[in-house]
Length: 145
Image 1: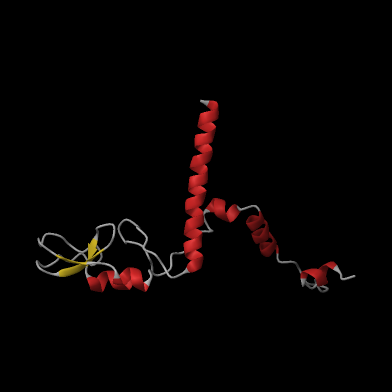
Image 2: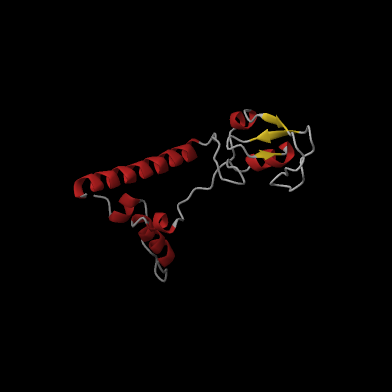
């Protein structure tokens, strides 16, 4: 019969060796879902997918009093700029590097699709969690109102 340490793939502490208390604390916090409670579990958004970036429409500027929210320079009349699905507009040279680092609008945080399957699953799980919370609230209200 294998020992506990062999089953777990661990080695017992050697003489004079101290346990890593921070590692134990981190495991405890993970087991108790404390990272989620503290907001530390938030995944950083990956870059927007190439298809989403390519699908951004070009818009021609009609009036020059509007400025790019990233570089704060006014758009020239007749200039072609990129429009996000949230209707915010940016210079191509400003928004394309931004979207190559993150998938969200710099103003309103509207998120474009990504090529990262893990992040997309994480977003879907967050949406399902909000829906479940609303369903539970509706159920509670229907039972106790």
